[in-house]
Amino acid sequence: MQRIPDAAIRRLPAYLRWLTECEEERVTSVMLGQATGYSSEQVRKDLAYFGAFGTRGVGYDVSALRDEIYRILKLDQGVRAIVVGAGHLGTALVRYVDQGHQVRHDVKIMALVDNNPMIIGTQVGSLRVEPVDRLEELVRTFDIGIGVLTVPKEGAVAVGDRLAEAGVRAILNFAPVAVCTHYPEVFVQPIDLTLEMQALSYFVGQKAHHRL
Amino acid sequence: MQRIPDAAIRRLPAYLRWLTECEEERVTSVMLGQATGYSSEQVRKDLAYFGAFGTRGVGYDVSALRDEIYRILKLDQGVRAIVVGAGHLGTALVRYVDQGHQVRHDVKIMALVDNNPMIIGTQVGSLRVEPVDRLEELVRTFDIGIGVLTVPKEGAVAVGDRLAEAGVRAILNFAPVAVCTHYPEVFVQPIDLTLEMQALSYFVGQKAHHRL
Image (tube, rainbow over all chains, first blue to last red; front, side):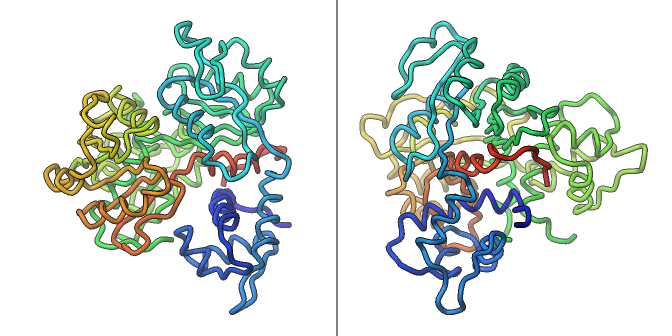
């Protein structure tokens, strides 16, 4: 199987969610594209990466496609995450996942840590905030693969290194600084909300937009 | 000027931030790439879209590059945003921007609205939560170009349509559903935190990762 580009991997969960919710037996790339906001060409190209080819006029088998994406993303094995930073954003994240926005419990937040004594020990959703000193121990105990960084810029690089050393292999980084630059084995997905809004500024002045 | 791909536009703010903070007079694509987590080839390709070509061994003029990206993103004109939904995530966002994570005040959140009478009228950072009924009026009064959707899935499509009709041209959508599908003039950037974590699951099992 050829390597699937990161951008395609990032679109698979959106397809997966819609496939999980839809009540059809078969879907076309046009339906899947409209529901998720991508072009039908994009959908066909993405799915072809792992050998899923629709039949013209008939489309894809929903159940088979769903299982295949689930398997590609390794969600069938389940994955556990730790959130570092129990501020506004970290708290919002934990509660968001707690509130059952997830269709299946394939990604589970196992721990929430912070370095603020005023916050440690408080309850956020179903989790108790643990001291950041316990980070390595928690990662090992729960076999955690994903770290979510919602700490301020100043502490982010050091925490990123600690997560990498402890064995975390993917990081969702909300801090406005590059982390784990010396760990090629760690995949970092940056999400900077200010940058996202800055990028949107470009589109505010556009007359019409064609999704690529 | 050729059309710049969306993916490149989304990387420009990251370059911009580092250029604003760095103290060099000239930077190379290697430096810029290392600081932002992209390959030097990617950096050169992105900057070449708008005619910025570095000189081999000398690099780019920091000040000129910074001004050019600022202009490309239309940040020199300033852009105003409204946040719809004053729950955990909406509140986190407003406070995040309030706390001065922004280098310049080029993107400004002007209003925060909700439909919950218990929340309307409360203070979040520097903003008072306004009723969602005032959405259209607020968009027009403040000449708002960006809408940030942090409402539950159920209300998202209707609110997206209202934002589009009111004149918003770019939406940052945290709701797990496609919005503004019938408004080609509105650019929608979906950010689904659960999906981001699902996509990361793929990388947890990888041995090494090469950024594309």
